[in-house]
Image (cartoon, rainbow, N blue to C red; front, side):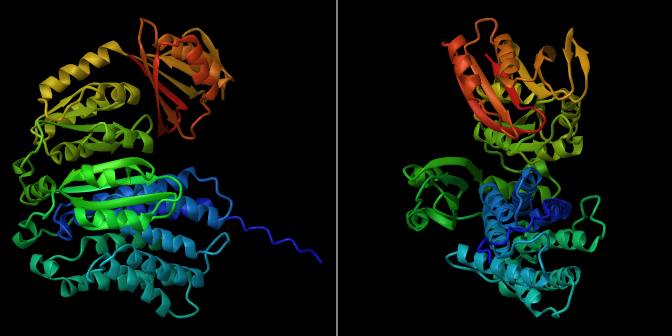
Length: 539
């Protein structure tokens, strides 16, 4: 008799991708409505946006996953939700994802009993994440979703279970003003709860094979009680991730509790996500610096966000109080690139790139929502420059386009940006950088071709410098070094490298660069962009 354990059942990753995309698509259709509803815990008007960004992190992880079992996929998606969580609602949702995913047993498709247990574990995880749970919020809605799943008939299908859960979720959201005074006084339902239901509704529609929204859903106008809200006691919404070994989550939570409110510290001994409203973001971050590596730092001025929300809802986006002379809207693809641009001072990062260009309407919305006297736009793609210029002309806030033609060029141009300088000063400095740099990239040829006198075979690496082919071959290091040599021409002393998804092994390449160019400073970041294993820029 064999004592070997049965092999793990293979998970249907493509099915998981379909459901994640559906959740995101439905949530995006309701994002503006949920932003407008946002009055609790502070009226900063970003709950819908934060949930979209958090769910987008889950979708990106699902798209990139090579998991072969449910536990492996669950771990990937849980970690993506944790590291990508934005704002109070996003952090709580990351724990909902974690509880739900951890409850699923191995198999290609979850059984109905697994789903019942998953909804309960999701609710319990969300409540555990908050030291002082408040009813009438996202927590209440998560609990009622779990109750609906547990109370559904024993022989229902997955589609019927999700239908019952969504119906109960709608009822729970409608009751939130009866449970929380600030919602009742404002005449709105809880934004986080509403967002959670739209996420689950998207999954339910996909499970039932029903169509998803094609366009944003129109929101009902809000009364003045919902628009004019008191400012938060604290000014800065601060979030970050700390990664390391043996992290003390409880100790960090205790240290941060005295600095502000809306505190959430979630994760495990290797990665912790922090969210806190405080007047001292530096102190909140420094509490964790001795524990491990700090990343994904996000600091938002909630007072400015509140004024922006009020101005938008009153139909006067430009009337909001601004807090900087220059704001910056950046277009790029890749989770790492988005994080990098935010860390360098970008106010808003809009998804877009070689295969997915944003619309003028998206850029107008981003420009108008930027709390600054004037806005600069980095299109980071030649196909986006004209759209950005059109958006700058249509926006209600003054805007200028700095015509960066690649993500790596935009990365270099960010270095001299200072929000307290005027837009004209920043534009001049950034244009100066763009005029002095050399840019290159390594991609993979999609077909046989001859370009700039170089024969290229399908599947080979192709090196480009300033849009001209310079090398091709099967060895990434050889092609990359040819590109590096060209972009460093002219006594350039700094080389920036953005790695794609999946990130290539750079050990040999970096050693060769050190050997051939010992005086060059090299800076490497995980960009996560598709189609381009390496993006390079030199100055």
